Every structure is written in C-alpha cells, then in structure tokens.
Length: 323
Image (cartoon, one colour):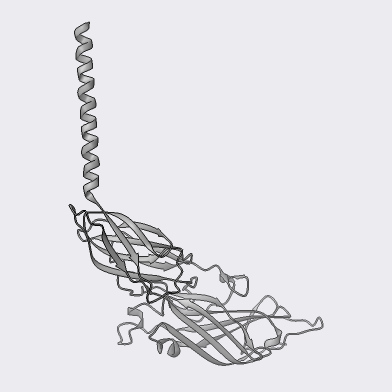
C-alpha cells in the first residue's frame, strides 16, 4: 500500500512538471513569433478626415489568409504581428453604406455599396419609382459618404529584434464628388418633394489597386430647389462604370448614364424625366464631376379640388396629360 502511494505521488510530480514545462515553451514560442509594431496613419493629404475607426489588413506573401487589426480613431496604434513579410491595406471601417468582402486574398479584396431601399427626398421605396431606360436590372445602391484607402508594400516583422518597428501609412480619398444643377425649371413652386438617381455607376472597388468592379448600379440621392427656377444636389460615388465597362474599343459596350429626376407636386401627382448625361460623366477623369442640365418643364399643380387622373401614377414630364 505504501509503495502504491509513493508511485502515485511521483507520477503526479512528473506530470505537473511536464505541463509547466510545456506551458513555458508555448509562451516563449508565442512571444518570439509575434513582433510588436507601431502603425501610424499620416493624414497629410486629408487633414480634415474624421474616420471613427480604421481597419488594417495584412496579406502574408506566402499566401496565408489575411490578418485584420482594428483601430479606434484615425491615429493607429501598436499591434502584434506574426513574423513574416506582408502587403498591407488599410481603410476606414465606419462607412455604413459600404460592405467589405473577400478579405482573405489580396487580389479579390474589395468593397461593395449596400442596397438602397428608399429615395432620399421622397420617403418612398426605391422599387416604386420608374427606372432609367437600359438600367431596369441595375441594383439600387446607397451613395457612399466617405472612403479612404492605402496600400503599402514590404511590411516585415523579423524575429529576434528588440526594437519596435514603426510603420507609416498615408491614406488617400477613394470616392468621387458629383454635383448636378438643373436650370430653367418651370413651376418649381408647386413641387412638394423631389429626388434623383444616376445610372451606370460603379458598384464596388478592388482595394489592392483601386480598380472599379464591373457591376453597375443606380445611385439615388437628394436634390432640392436652389433658386427660383433651379434644382441642385451633391452626392458621392465610387466612380462611373467598371474598368472594362468604360472601354470604347469595340470589345465592350460603353456604359450609358441616365440622370432621372422625380417630383411630387402639391396635388399629389408624380412626374419624372430622364436626361442622358453619358458625355458629361465620361468627360470627368478626376474625383469631381459637375453635371449641368437645362430645362425641366413641370406641369402646374392642380388646385381647388379638381379631378387629377395622375395621382398615384408616375407620368413623364414631356408627356401630355390625357383629358
């Protein structure tokens, strides 16, 4: 009996010692594999940028899945990085209109605009308005409010160094500013609500090189009276068309862009009009596109309880009211 107790005690001591030794080895292994690094975002190009959060994705050169780090605010911070060499991509992660997809591989890593379900200014579902000709099958997508991105090569974390490596990244703006002005708008005083859409816009972007995806979407946005006879509005996009959709060499048809304005008058009648603005959109190769349109002949709103056959139906502005 005494011999059995001695043997059991010795076995317990050996097992405890082995477990402690194994834990120490694992701790040291993890400590040597993960290297501290200070990440700093340099906002020299956009000093007024105000992202609430930033995401950093590290793509190992050996093809392993990416590693994501999240920072509060725009400054950056310290991270622990497994030893290796990486390509780094960072973007703000606080834009509700944008989905981040395909994060494992560098070549497929992209953002995509979320679906839009309502037209600003009309408080009406997007599915209830007439679509631009040729864009009937396009997805209605929300306009982005902000997007900054940056790619950096050659980030490496080496084992055995006691110095904390510093890594600086300089984000640039990845969205385009669009504006529209419609002059000579007749009977603007009878308008109670108004909205607009632009078709043929890019639905997504590949983040490793900024290439636009080939999905085209229609983006709704709000416009409003800006004078006695004018309407205007501003909104953001990822850009127009996808990269291959804008070729005009015969291998791919040119994407058309239709600007559609929707107006509801005081008598409840609903009117819309389409403008082809392809030339104006494609003439802009920078981050700014200004669309200028002339003439919108809205009918006068009926008053005095008169019979209005167009209430509840969408009518084209240039279509005569049947009597």
